[in-house]
Length: 372
Image (cartoon, rainbow, N blue to C red; front, side):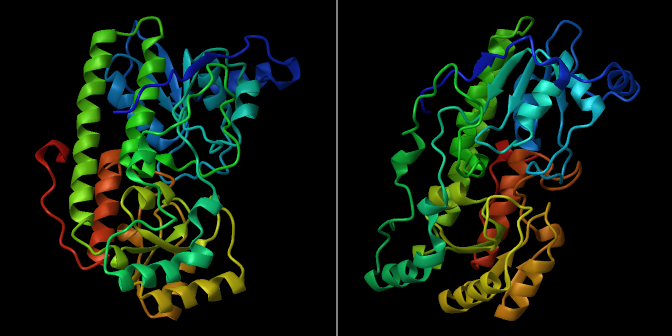
C-alpha cells in the first residue's frame, strides 16, 4: 500500500450571495430531494459526485452515514448539471467526496450555488495525473509494437510507467485546489490507484463527527483486500498474453492508467480526448482505421455511457470486431443496478474479461472474494 495523503479541507462558509440558490429554488428542491443510501440517524450526511466515488464511499460507511450520489449510472461527469434538489442536498452535506483531477469541471459552480461549507474530500489527492504526451499512441503505438515483437522480450516501452509509478505519487498540500489542473482524471481504471482513492476517502470521512471509526477502518481493510485481489487477478490473466499482442482501442481516452498498470499498448481512441463529449474529425477517424489495420488490433471497444455509432463505424471500416451494447466497457460511469458494472469491482471484472477475450484468452476463475 502507498502512504496515505490527507484529502480533506474545509471550504469557506461565506460564499458570494449572488451565487447561492434562491429561496424559490430551495423550496422547489425540498419537494424532490434526492434519495440517500446508508442513512444513519446519528451519522454524517455525505454527497459523492461520480458513480465510482459514490460506490467507494458506500463501501466504506456501510449503514453509518447517508450517502447521496449526484451522477446517475451511465451519466457523463464531463457535462453534468446538478438539479436544484441535488444542490439542496449539497447545501446540507457534512462532506463532499469528489473524484478530483479536474473531472468535475462544474464543481466550483455547484459549491458556490449550494452554499456548501463542509469538508471536501478529493479522492485523487496525491495521485500524479498523466496527459496526452505521456501516452502518445498517435505517433508511437505501431513502432513500439513492432519493436517489442522484434526484440522478443517483454521490456517496457517508453509509453508505460514502471511498476514503481503506483507508489511514486506527489504529496498533496492540505490546502490544495481540488482541480489538479490539466491531466487525465480517469485514475480509477487502475485498481491500485483506486486503492489510493479509497484511502483518501476513508481518511476524510474519519474526520467527520458521528463516524464510527472502528467500523470505518474495518470496512476499509476489507475493501482494500478486494481491490488487491482484483489487481492480482487482472495481472495474472494479462501476463498470459505476450506484450506485443496487448493492443487496445476504446471509445475515448479513459483507460490510460489501466494501460500503464498492465503494460498494454493503447493504439488509439474513437474520440481522441479525455472528454467524452468531443467528436472525432474525418481525418482522425481515417488515421485510427489505418492504425488498427497496421497494428493488427482485433477489436474496437465502445463504452456503456457513450453512443456506439462511431466505434461501430470504425470497426466496420477496419474489418474488426466491435464490442458494444452489453459488451461495452464501463469507462466514465458504472452501470445500472443489476448490470455487471453496477459496482466498481463488477465493472473492472467485466472490462478485463472482455479485453482478455478480445485477445483470445479465457480468463481464470474469479476469486471467491470478488464474487457476488
